[in-house]
Length: 266
Length: 266
Image (cartoon, rainbow over all chains, first blue to last red; front, side, top):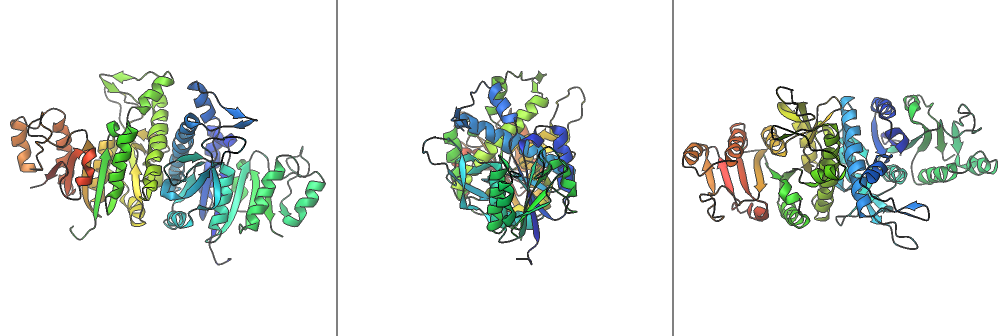
């Protein structure tokens, strides 16, 4: 669909959000990106600190965090309230016409409360194949707004749900690839996929799907990078043009095609 | 401007928000209102409770609450986060395509930090004559969305500010009266302006500006109703077609013209 206009969907994680300086530096680079774009932000540590300050116990089952009713309230307050609105106000200052959204706003992202199997994760929303309301999001984009998504969605029946921000970003990129030539950009703390994990300058600039298995066999792609890249190639298989992974501090290099590692189909 | 389409701007206060049952009953009535509409919601007691739970002292100077940095964070979390998104999720359930907004979102409402004279109110934003970005709000309305405003605005320089919800509702009604035939509806705990304050059935159905002073002289309009009605007539003087004041529980009667007291120019 090369006749469609380009859309960049950029996800930042908690480590950037937790530092006001890092966040503001990142937002300047984000605001400067030309063309249509969407920001998706994760949570950061504010919600956990808030929970601790309120004397709430963070519930874990088999090493995984459980979102009970009290935790959902805090996630909604912090992610969709404090963090989202602070980012939007900052972007407006930078002349980027941002609007902050949860999945409930404009019914943009509907999710399904995770079914209880061995573990009851509580108020966690899983993305479905039809979660993304492309018509609604298109209205915002075509009106010139830059949507800023927090990791809160809804089930369409009045229930807000906590949803993984990486998954939201991927679902947006896949869903909107029918309407736009979408690129998905994951910002994290490393410069990209490194050929030598001890050398931040050894970034592999491009990885095609056919190179993924050999790089895994060589041990270049290991540990936490494996699921990240599997998700990336899955998104590409579903219509996303390119998936990038790189350092939030380097987003200004994105336009020059010098940002992190780019994953492509072939 | 009778050729313009109608727009109802409805404000609900904290007493409705503090009761989940009352709020849901109100939202059903709001969702059922046909045509273009905007909801503005106040704060309620959740923010004060949250502040108390976090051990924060509510700062008062000469009986007036001060919004320091910690209180602004809480107001942003609760008003623009928890309350706003809960309302939006509920409206979506009722097939009302709501989007929750702070004044920063889409740069819809810009305010000015209140100047320090005798008292430093802290992070409180005052509305200016050009606060309302009608072009931005029009985009949402024309796209079929129902904006839901929390009482958080921004100064355009990256600072969020706490702003009175009544004032926001009036500013929206005045600003948007250039584009729409706006009515402003204040929901509160009484059935309207009462001829006999002890009789909820003695609602005065209509008050023209010329009747305001005589009703004050007669003592029918007294105490807290005086500034409310002054603000109402000020809005009418600036282009708002009608201002209503009545009970949130009676909003279903609005379409039949049987809601509370209606203030008109003449």
